[in-house]
Image: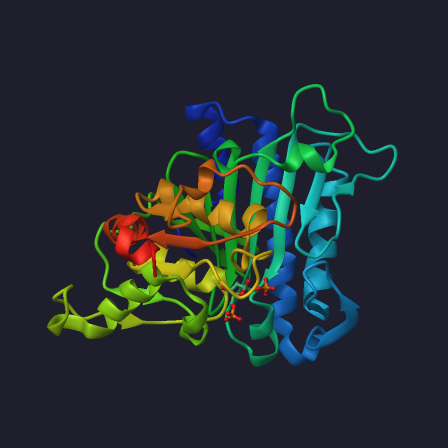
Length: 339
Ligand code: AFP
């Protein structure tokens, strides 16, 4: 058996040393419980009747997979009676989820993408769960959508689980980024790495290049220069990887560096990006900053942006500090702006 701290012991240590609120620790433990259940379903694959699609379409206009719906339900059930959250919101629900009548409302709002990378489900590739915990505004007993519209800097905790060879939980409580691996046999998460750091320079990038024709000039310039490798202006070779699940691509960035981009897309002015701010961009942006990286839209820090709606989409460029700063500089370049 791995001889490290369990997640529960880590959270107790955070309470003792840093005054972490017991209720917030409880929300994280409830989330870990949900993740273990989702991991079990994921590991069943075709044997578990969780592959394939439902007949439903979510607010994003995407056909819901069975596992999207199952994972969403699991997370709701694991939190709704805890007395620690006041309301929840998710990629899979049109509007916010109020707790059943009679349940005690807690101090936190939970926002999540229950199953990130849905197109990977049926082909047995990496998928994940992303979550963000916000404070419920003081005096609010019956939260409304407007109470969720807080900038990412307000997050008191953010994290994700990746369901891959191992189930790994990566989280921040605002004091660094820590990684836990699930021991499936005994059902416990163990701390395997404290204080993940993203190296300031990188030579690996992740972007869906099939969208090239919709990108703005600064992004085309950056990617062209990566392609040019050591014979180009950057003077070094780059490597490209694309998993098609933000969790998996960003887990690689947090684990071995580089940048992840889902930039502004000129296809549809109503969708200035693909990724959703509250339950995809914000939590991964907080983890990135806590690991010493930068998370930007290309023009502004993601964590400073005030969301306008629950399912708002924004451009996302995050990872190695110097790479993201360079891409931000390209966004300020007047000749590129006029192209
Ligand atoms: P889902 O959460 O709906 O599965 O979306 C996955 C995702 O938003 C994100 O995880 C990926 O980075 C991105 O889509 C992949 O999109 P492409 O279709 O462009 O590969």
